[in-house]
Image 1 (cartoon, rainbow, N blue to C red):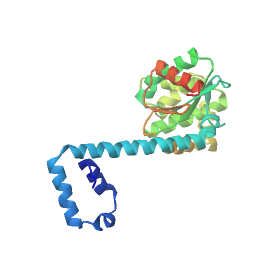
Image 2 (image 1 turned 180 degrees about the horizontal axis):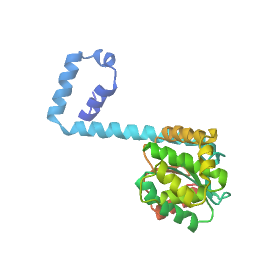
Image 3 (image 1 turned 90 degrees about the horizontal axis):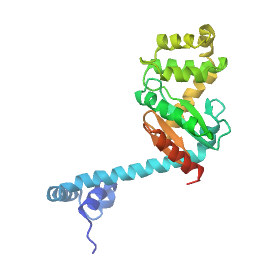
Image 4 (image 1 turned 135 degrees about the vertical axis):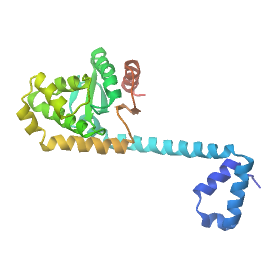
Amino acid sequence: MQLLRPTTFILGIFLAPFPVLAQELSEERVKELALEAIRENPQIVMEAVQILEQERSAAQAQAGADVLKNQRQLLEQDPNAPVLGNPNGDVTVVEFFDYNCPYCRKAMSEVEGLIEADPNVRLVFREWPILSEGSIFAAKAALAAREQDKYDDLHWALMEMDEPAGEASVLRVAEEIGLDIARLRSDMEASDVQDHIDESMRLAQALGFNGTPSFVIGDNLVPGFVEQNQLEALVDQARDGE
C-alpha cells in the first residue's frame, strides 16, 4: 500500500468532497487524522498553502493565455484605443494605466524611452481608471482630447503632474496645452469614451490584472512597474516569437 505524504493527505481533505473520503473513513476520523498530521508536522500547513497558491497561479496563467489567444485582435487593434509610437510597428505593447497611479507616472519615462529607442514599437494605451473619481475624469478628458488631436499632449502632461488628477487640475492642464474646454467637456460625454473605459475594465479583469500599470507584450502579461531595459527585453522576445 502506498503511503501519502502529510501534505498530500491534507490537500486531499481540503480538495476532495467528503462523500469520497467517507466511503472508507468517518467524517470524525478524517478530522482526527488531519489534526494529528498537523500537530506532528506543522510545516505541512504552509506547504499545503504554497501548493494551493501554485495551482491558483497556474490556473490564472492559463486563463490569461486563453484570453490572449481569443482577445489579441481587440487588445492590439481596437480602433477605439489610442496608439502611440509607430502605428505600423512590428511589436505591440499594450499598457493599462491610471493617471493617479504613482507607479504609472514613474513608468512614464520608461515607456517613453522605449518608443524613442525602438522605432518599431507600437504602443496601445488602455485607460483603466480604478483609483478614484478624479481618475475617471482624467481618463475621459484624455480620450475626449482625441477629437482635438491632443491626446498625446494631454496624456504626457497629466502623467507629469505633481498633484492628483481631478476635475480642476485636469482642466487646468488641458487649457494650458491649448484645448477648447467647452468642446472637451462635451466630447467627454461621447459613447466611445465610456465604451473604451468599459472595455478596459473587462479586458483587465479577464487577464487577471489587479493593479496599474499592467502590460501585455507578446505572450507575456506583465503586472507592475517595469524599467525600460526590461520592456526592451520583452519586446525583443515578442519580436523573436519566443
